[in-house]
Each structure stands twice: as structure tokens, then as C-alpha cells.
Length: 173
Length: 53
Image (tube, rainbow over the protein chains, first blue to last red):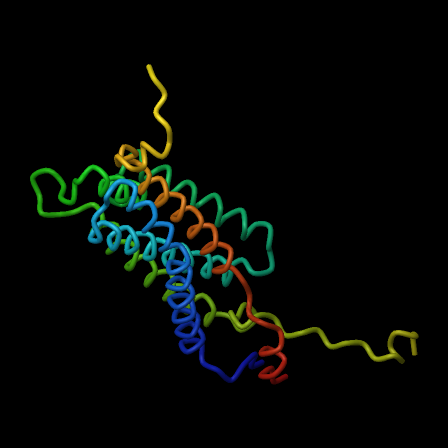
């Protein structure tokens, strides 16, 4: 059975571009608040742009993970939401406490303390966070493409609508 | 310790964590919305339009 004539790759690409555009829109909505906050303590524009970059790429990675969960766990809606919330919180808590360069929260806080670079290296917290988020988003989207292509019934295009019963069928004829 | 009014704090730039509190709140909102919209399905209209049985 063909669920849709559109290939899976174009569906995932469309989903990715829509995610990027929507994330940029949400960041633009939050930008005035960041500018207001920066006027209070005189934060530089370079820090604002880095914070926006870290937040945007992390949100994109989380969106990709949510899309992967949607593809794999689509029939189990409660399980899907639970997995997304649990894994997101567990990732933030674990990385903030144990692997700080991977954590977006640590990356934002490191910008506050002026630690653009880690001690003894040329590696910066925010840059590591941005690169890892982009890589994670790519891996999740590729996995979602493979996961949806492996079985036609679990296509990301959703399930086919159940045919509406006719009046005759509803009456029991 | 004498209380300093909020406007004095703001004028003197004595609230150094304001920006990063705002940034963390923005990140929290973004993360929630990303998880919410990322797991959203496709519209049924497009499925019914392209569905071939």
C-alpha cells in the first residue's frame, strides 16, 4: 500500500525546513526580551547572538528528537509524550551536572561568566553545544527518515483516515 | 541594610543576572514549544488528498 506518493526524504526535508523557520520565528519573538534584559546589565551584542545561537540549535535538536519519537511511537501518544519529556529533562540534568560542555544551560551560563573558552583549550562551551546540537538534529532527522521508510504503516505522513461509514452501514444494512 | 529601589538598581546596572535569567527562561519556553510542535502530526487534509489505496 502506498500511503503517499511523496518520497520520505522530501517529507523529512520539508519538516526540517518548517522546523528551522518556526524556530527562527520563535527566537524573533523572544529577542525583544533579550534586548531588554541586556540593557539592564549592559550585555554585549556578541553575547546576545551566542545565546540566540545556543537556544535555537538546542531547540532544533529537541524538535528533531520529538519528530523521531513521533515517527516511532505514533500510535502510543501518552508514551510518546512521556518519552520526550523524560529524555529531554534527563539530558538537561545529566549534561548540566556531569558533561557540562554538552549542556545548553551550561553554555548560556558560561557566557555570563565570560568563559568563552574552556581552560587550557581553544574549545568554547557554546560552540561545542551548538555543534553537538546540529549533529544531534541531523542524526535524529536521518533516523526518522529511516524509521518511517522501513514500514509503510508507520509513515510520518500519518495514518490514512478511516473511511466514514455510510448511512446504510450505520443503520446496520 | 537599606533597601535600594528597583529603579535605582536598573539605572545603576546593578542587576547583572537579569539577562541570563531572561535567556534561561527563553530557552525553557523554546524547549517546551520545540518538544510540543516537533511531535505534532501532519494535517489530515493532506493525507486524505494524497492517500492511494
